[in-house]
Each structure stands twice: as structure tokens, then as C-alpha cells.
Image (cartoon, rainbow, N blue to C red):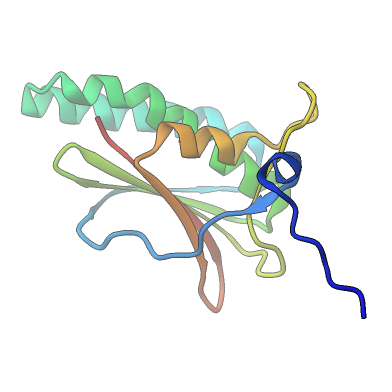
Length: 157
């Protein structure tokens, strides 16, 4: 009988890995929702996110939200691009908020695959959207329902 070897951490760094399966925190309230069918609609998503953050920053007279806008737009763009390219349409993006924290959920209709975090790859080979989301977010996860696969990211100051 052959016993499978367990790679040490240095061997494991080049492999794609799964994203943690979990539901997002429930404390968030809905802000806005977008339904996307193609990458050409990403510009409208980015503009809509900027408008929402700017409106909330002015209403609160809170400059903390200004710093969140860049991360929020970048993470939403990466996750939505992944869903459009690798999932099944339509892609549904939702923005939720609790105080200065935001929650992005990105759903697609491909239940056959799970999100994978890219391992070490040469520049230009793609696969870094989830890595970017993990680096810029407080928390990231994913889950499935009977109809959609949802990747979520919590973003805050």
C-alpha cells in the first residue's frame, strides 16, 4: 500500500487552493444591486460603486469611507470579472453596508465549480482576482444555494 505524502508548505505554494466556504456576516443592510451579462458592463458597476461610496461619505461627513472606495471598486471588479468569465450568466453583484464596513456579494449560476485561489503563476497568466480580494478585504468566503454560487468580501477601513 502506498501512503500519500503530505507536501510541506514550500511545495504547496505553487498549487491552486480552495477559498473558505462560509456565509457572510448577517449584520449588513442592502444598498444596491447590479445584474451583469458581459464584461462590457463592468464600467457601469465601477461607476455605480464609486457613486454609492461618495454619497455615503458625504452624508456621514466621514473621510474613512473615501479610503474604502478604491479597494471596494477593485475587489468588485475582480470578483465580477471572474464570475462573468468562469460562471454562468447572469452575474449578480450586491453591495451591503454596516457602519463603515461594506459587503460585496457576487453570484453566478455555475454550481459545478468552486472558486480557486491561484498559486504562484507567471505574470500575464491570470488567476489573481481572489488573491487581490483576500489582500484588500477584512474577510472573504463563498457558498452555494440551490441556484447560485456566491463569493463575498467584507471591506472596511
